Length: 256
Image (cartoon, rainbow, N blue to C red; front, side):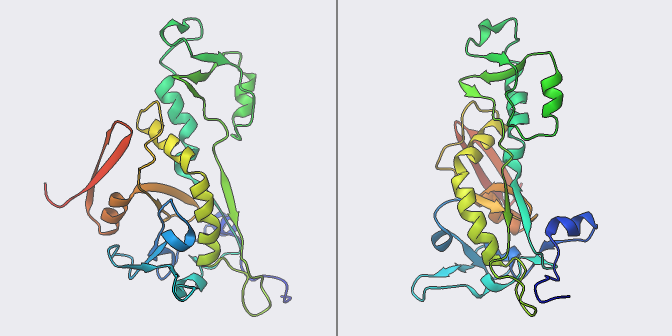
């Protein structure tokens, strides 16, 4: 193997070969990542995976340095890249259709006057787009003052900041992962709240005060949790969630 040839494979190649790839317990499993702020102000590091109450700052403002966990590999085994997506966004269009398709019919729009039916214009990025285009039946494009959320299956490929030099580098570190992922999720926060509102059966996004934390147990397939839910699940406790207005709330259930 030449010095320029990395010994590591991509996350996707390893999974295709049926190799188990997981977040490293001494790095990825320690990350507390709210979807707000910046990498330097928002992210914290747990003392151990089962103790979400004891956290230290990922970035030491006084010293101007990152936590030692930042240099560790994000996964076991190490990977040369990883492509991530957000489950809530991938499910958004299907959930939207489940909420709105029964509101009206193409030939009877009176109940919901702003409902719009027609042909899809493309851009959804789904494998079944061609099937939709071949279908003569009109499709729901807009309802309840909301456009059908097309093309929301955003993906981000994360690569190492340090190339393989024959001895070191060439794998995705914790810092590579969070420094690319966190600002990307913050930019997508409005869409994520929209998708979560739809999943809750609402005609509008969850409120901006919703306190979201990233569940990256599956490094490639991210899910959003309320802060209290994330903490409860890390402790192995039952969590009860409820939706009222535009707010999804959660509480840790200590006894029934």
